[in-house]
Length: 426
Image (tube, rainbow, N blue to C red; front, side, top):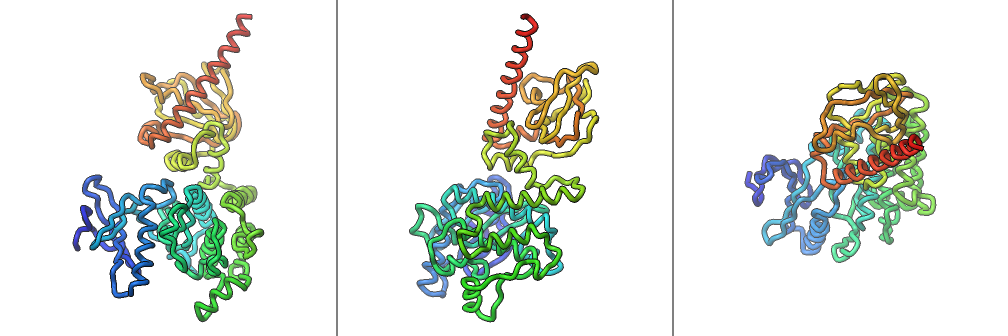
């Protein structure tokens, strides 16, 4: 197998009508990458070649632009007369396509969590002026149990890149009625396609089926899909309603934006937890919690996802000693909810509540790892634990936001201390 440019090819991962994808090694960084090699100049005919070339230009124009933890990164794009390829982030879990068949369907909570992450990734893409136009299980790559990466932006509409726009591309079964009718598209078209994807992941079948492509397109534009529960009675009513809302033909009745879609998915998790003992904290709940905490109010969405991925979350019951005086530790703690007491020689020095942190002094130079106070839960709490060595390896932007938050915490505590001293002196 020949190498591609400077990249050492390992094996072929897959192929399509216009390209092949290879696993390769970047010899300079020694990291695995996926290379999509385009076969633009074939015997398909001039019109087809021009279309494929535009698709390649569209995707290559996004190199280095979509920086989100749930979107496949494009590192490099090479365009030449005899070689055209994209160098992308390698995701080892394969696509969601294999989880759309009966017997292979994912748990309801996993599906909801995956769709939530897709909503947030596509919301970010929209802020960058990008509408995907080809959302389907095959273009959602799975990493771990429920982490995902959106891929294949070749069919995208990109603001200020209308010269690369190609009509009539996409996967018909997942297209919105307005996309089939070649009407102007907004994020609501991607919302519809993600609704169809969710339908397929929940039921193992598409909402519309026909004997011909013409019949399928007619049904999508004019027909009403049967509710997902028609084919699987145990689908929760909340998820059944979310899919139907996302797939409304009338744009005024469909979700207006990604946040509406995501909030309904969050509500599903909140509603479910009322009726069952939930030891696991889902990423959906974690993200919404981070976004609500004062400590993280200046963090951008991308940085919140980064924190979510390197933090450890756990629930702790009331009257549990979290830290003892004299303990050696290198961990920062942030309260996702509940209250803890700060103790010195058994005496209560203060109380911390939701959004507050302890252990942050270890972040600063010349501090020791020996705990000078004890911490005990005053209620049931959810702790966010962050290893400071791991934080040191986070992105520059993320570390800056942490330091900024630490500075606000210290200033606030100094102000409180000064007030107390003033009262004592008075």
